[in-house]
Image (cartoon, rainbow, N blue to C red; front, side, top):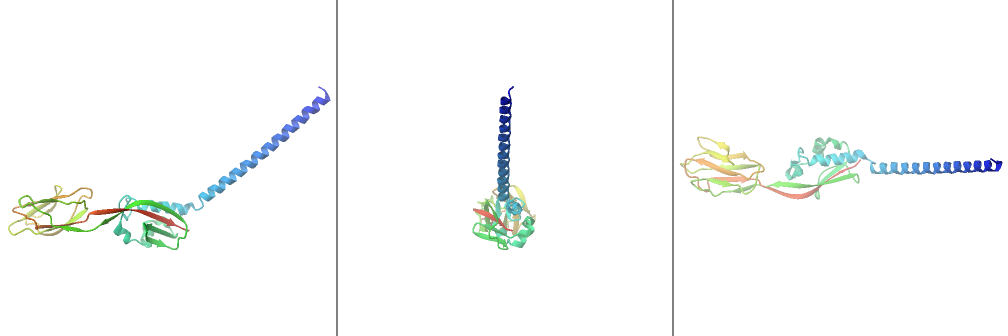
Length: 234
């Protein structure tokens, strides 16, 4: 091998090493920049994970089956909402800690502490339940006194006033005995009923029980859609 060929090969090897060093440097710079961008993105997305966790956890628990504000999952009781305040909420949902927060149902703020001007807001769609008393005097067949409530209700108040000469010994709701008195069921009575069943009342008597002998007050459910918004700030 001539000296010229050896010098040529040495020069090529040096050039290859130089190119490799430049490539490694560029790769290191790109990797560093990518990691930095990823770190900044994670920092921005998770800037205050504790605040977000508090908002998410509170919104979940507020509409759960075990919440003091619900009658069943995702259905909140309007009366319970009216009685709600910040002190009760922090007792029920300690995950709120000492942070400022606001809880809104539709356009109504049901509880607020501090002045949450920004923070994290979590929204959930719910039904708001309201129950109003309805009183009626059901039509009765004197010889076979029965009637069915037109709406489902978890309880009812019966006023039983049989005419002279008639004794009501048993009152049934869907076949279940809810009132019994061999001396006579007479007066005002509050009875619990199956929440998810239509109730049919039947009366056992030793005589006629005409229309006007029974008055019933029940509490049918009406619902409306609303958005629950839980805002938690620092």
